[in-house]
Length: 618
Image (cartoon, rainbow, N blue to C red; front, side, top):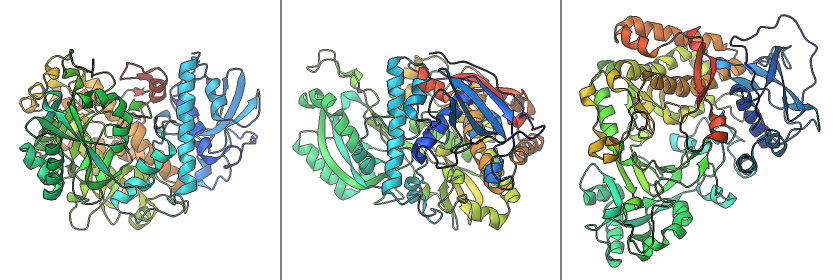
């Protein structure tokens, strides 16, 4: 691999004069919109993560200077890959994020002006296996996006009137930064239609009975009572009858839901365990479900206020395989109870900008590595760890107060078919500046308070947040998906005596070092998680949208953020010494390199390897 590196100015360079405008491809000219977006996000990531050498200089505004959608692109970018020169126009956004103008990328020397995915990937100089993997994942992202445009109606009409569960399917945009935002390795187009969130297809879960010796289960009540409540009397009785006919009584076997695609995918690997009577398929049963934006988390469409169910899938999306972490699913209920206790006992969170937690109240995992080595089917742990299990999470629809509605936070970044932001009517109704101020109060401050006051950090990126509102006016923030990315440092907890004893659920947690589980060694880890997920890859999307479409400058947005943090510090709610342990005024911060993780991340979890400007510290 031969990436070159050149630092980007840490402060935006302001134009000192007008340059002769360069001819750029108009939006829609050249490759189709799906491929253009994938290429654009790939180049944005390469530039932001300092993986290619480039030059950035001020230029005249791209297009009509009175049109904020085009006038934000105030810079020309030039870079070279594999002896070929490229140029584009870009906006220099919060935290040093470079945003390429749509359709502006072109090859200026070395070949056709038009850029395509295979040519760009070849130019990166990866080894053959990495090149094939990356090209395949980018190409599948393009193909699934094309399918959506050809077969779905989501991009043809505004989605503002849709309810929460319909929005979870209709928000087809995917990750706004990662170039592999629609990769689903192993999914065919038929799988995409049947199980992808975009098409909104409904399906039943399949069920397995698994020998108790190979399972770990954490439920809020006795097992039969739990399943009877979750499934309903008739469906539970049906499953029990099927299990009895197969000799899989509940005393010796545990019930497990499994995604129908996952069962088909794993069936060859499960055959020996099935033959040995350790795993018994019981067929499809129960309510119907539909995939959410996260693909592996499903909402109940038969009874919408019942649990969301998170099931592992043997696919890679963005940079991660979407299994369940084997030792974390069953600690989810204990973690949720702890967080709920912290919130319930905190007057600020109860009476001020309130936060809602969607508790993960049940977890279960198939643990094939616990099978005896002498098992008739050899080593059953190969390729099955983390692949069968479930986490049951509360539905947001059961949390709404009178007059409240819920929207996925990702909707706040969306632009609708009429060319206006999803939130356009809200901003017009309440006023952009007033609305932004309220949003920061409702969303940022509770997450900040949980961090600096209680000592707990969450992976609070947009997909893990739900905004509750009343006619567009933000009222509360909902946090979800805790079990895989919640962090704390023991000596930074405000009440360490309440910290969960995870080893009581799984002895694994008594054997691991700091940074391998929920417990971190350094407060810096908490700061990195907060800054990345709340600011760099979340709020920065909203601040850019507001400047591009509404003329509300990013500097004004981040000024409001700094004001709220200052008001919080002066409020006396939290000891300033605690805040000082998290908050830093350094001009530069470390940010996770998501693309580099994609290219080089085998066996590594963290890639906080490049520095960028700290917009909040200005």
